[in-house]
Image (cartoon, rainbow, N blue to C red):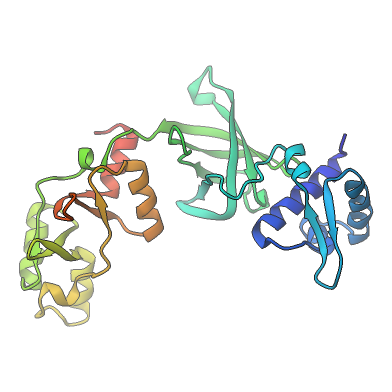
Length: 292
């Protein structure tokens, strides 16, 4: 049975190795754990004799975890596993993912706690941090909560949950606005601004011969005016970075596309890539919250 120090060393080694994909020096582990490098080297000898660590000789050498190490700490060793992200203040936390969620109390939803088994250096997260976990790969579960405990040895976060919900299994077409407002590249900025304002929308696709050539938002118009481009046409200030989504894509995948591309709306297209609707981040969040 491993001691608490050995478990923390092994966990730190796996966290570092996962990000570096190269042998890890004892000094790197010592720095993370705030321990003497000599202590780490001594413990590594024991871990090697247990078959949990492999030593790599040479100037670039160090230590690597074995498959047995992953199994001992109940961590998935496959590189092909689906990564479940953690967000803090709406931003994805780098190099930390979730491997397991266990609800420790569900009798009273307002007092529900969850134990989060993480992969990565959880010392980046502090008590009191508001975080979001998910969506998970199968049931698309999203968990919001506040960090109330942290076990660095077992890499576990204790979360006081504030919301637990599953992303509805709907396609983007089911939640998109189908009555699509379209702009033309030759439209003036003033005309486009009036259309968006009258319709109460933030942006619209720019269409030419039935195909999307760009997207114009109120932010684009504001920027154009600030740059003295108010006399130009829509095609001069629109964004040509177009992200479209096929109508049968699930909304959970659409959320991932938005997060990846840092955008707030997607143009929904049919099999012939013709624009048939638009879906916004607000549309998707309303679905998750059960407001639509």
